[in-house]
Length: 432
Image 1 (tube, rainbow, N blue to C red):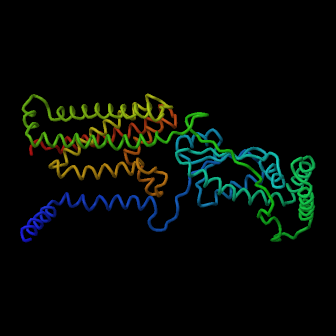
Image 2: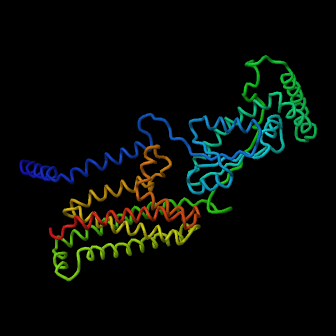
Image 3: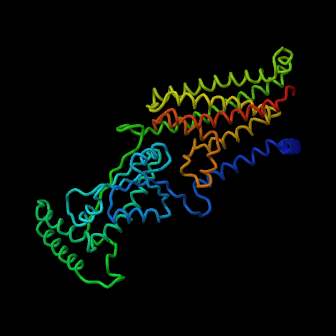
């Protein structure tokens, strides 16, 4: 038993002596747990506001009340915009959804309160299909605010009489309403008309309670439309999955390229190469060039499988897709060079590089879409290059956006690559 304990103590001492391995073993689970805790729960906090575009095409007081109520609701971050601009914001991922209130909605919805059947006005909801959970939230809160505004108008003296008159005509012409229901609805209409005609003092709390009474029907309908690259084109969830996983595993390839450089340095190959009439920058640039070619080839192969097997399509600019892919490939090669320049040995460096890569991938939205992040984390990820890569690839695929949308993410990726390369060239050690 003594030799076993002695050997075990020696192994523990060696592990504790390797500070980098110890740091990775402690820090990695803490950082990843903190990330998912912040995203999926954590301490009670104020929920993130949902970016929502609103187009109000109705001049009625009812529509104005609905928009005002949604602006006052802390669930939404409302931006009023014309319908084409609202649709564009959803398509570009800048708004989760857009609500379009049609002309004449207020009057038609007030009458719809008392319609047992027949058409009702429709509010169009344009939503981002990659964030479809938002649709149910928007529809539920929209129904709440609309019911309050429409019920107030239906019982008020301005729209109420017209709504009752129209409902009486429709009830008389309806062939689907049985006689008992027809009689009860007629009694209800008489009671509502008496309420509307009754003189009430200013500020009387009995006026227009804003609550829907039993037996009333929803005074409007919603028309849902997923905003993708074009009409009739469905959202393919594999588009996001392949963007995220391609970025993650190509970055892992960059780590392996960095490990190969460290092994070459250990074996003395770099020392021999320096004897050749080639500058240090040229030697390192050759590694960036080869890494870029390999990374870009892997990206194209991954997306070829996505297109052939999973139905992913480049609905937007193919040139934009290629530009973002090339810029990310340059970043991957430069990142591998940076790993090699900062690391001492392959064994000590690999764990740290993997943790750094996982953090970049998580913050970029490869595992969990960034829209579920807290507000502060969403803002912070705007400085993370992996998010630029994922957003750029999605823009060129299912979002169907043009070449111009690829310029900003590509420029950011190339700037990050230049920074990595500059640090790597300055700090690279040629000998073990």
